[in-house]
Amino acid sequence: MRARRRAPLRALLMAMIVLGLAGPAWANEATSVGTALDTAWVLVAAFLVFFMQAGFGMVEAGFIRAKNTCNILTKNFVDYCSASIMFFLVGYAFMFGQGNGLIGLSGFALEGAPNPSGVPLWAFWLFQAAFCGAAATIVAGAMAGRMKFPAYLLYTVVISGLVYPIVGHWIWGGGWLAEMGFADFAGSTVVHATGGWAALVGAVLLGPRTGKYVRNGHGRIVSRAIPGHNIPLASLGVFILWFGWFGFNPGSTLGVAGDGGSLAALVAMNTNLAAAAGALSAMVTIWIVAGKPDLSMTMNGCLAGLVAITAPCAFVAPWSAIVIGLIGGVLVVFGALLLDRIRVDDPVGAVPVHGLNGVWGTLAVGLFGQQAVGATETGLPSGGLLTGGGAGQLGVQLLGVASVVAFVLVTMGAMFLAIRLTIGLRVGRAEELRGLDIGEHGMDAYAGFQVFVTE
Picture (cartoon, rainbow, N blue to C red):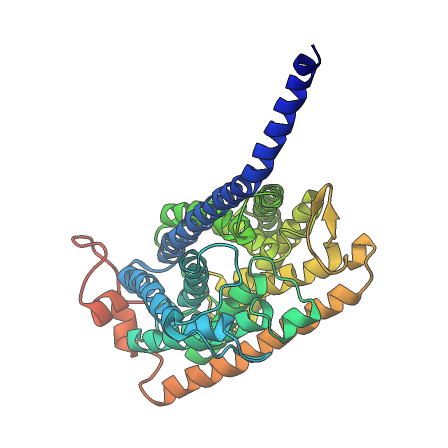
């Protein structure tokens, strides 16, 4: 009888022993499954960010003249190719390699390259290379319709191989801004401000398109609208970019295993809310200013909201994301009007979308940032000025974005000046009027259709 009573106890003890021995194996298997899930997440996000190149191409092609369509699409195609090669050879090393607070100096061509992520190096590199390509392609739109193709090729080599990786090292590679607690979750500064302010200095040095600024009957110089040739194409591009941003921002969690899923969901929600708010506020603003709800400005408002939320998307509550997007939409309208007033020709609005809103989104971290949103820990060093955290984080954000803007303006300005003094930045007047498709590439985007090339 006593032996029968002890039998269940023996069985329980044996089960505990078996479970104790198997525990490490189960833990290893769970870790392996988590790594595989995170790797798949990062790869899919990288594919979505890569698909954004098509979005940039469609937006820029739609917003410019028909006679320059092949040229702008070629630039969008080739700058990603160039960025991929340069980021493999030197860019990743400068960005994530061991070095100092200013630049990484190890891991060239990924030989012995460090991997700060929790996923395989190859997946992490692909995700970061897609970001590098996005930064490089921003400039194409602002300099569309009059820039020499060889000059653009040289530009892509410099920004993707040197300028972008250095900025990335400062913020994401353990550099001096990272040590100060600067926060840019997915790249309002690293990607968008870098590309947007490079676009500004390039547009200034290149000069406006022929016929953009003309004298009116009173002798005053006024801005003349040069409408894009295909707004439906641009609209498709904006939807592609909006879709791709769900890889850009949520993918920057670098995983969804464990608590990563909750953070990724917050980031996705904030991204969508800011985009919608930016579109609506830009539409209302241009409606008030110009009397019509202009579609092109509405679409740029959507992109402005997306750029603005890219830095704070993991650090703010959904209500803050709406406010950030609303302000971004207003900024893009008045930013475009300001450029026209100072006679800087930006055919697609790259500077107000990426440059101004890259800065705004970065500063928004210091205003609206929270260390926790509900039960989700954000990892922000301190809260923002408007959420009870004081002005400390805002000061760091201001110093960081100002330093990046100054660095980009100086380096890219020097590069564009060097190109202008050597091979030249701008095509001739006759080639510009004829169109860069024929002049630079010897082909037509719309074969069989008459394209007017007299202005």
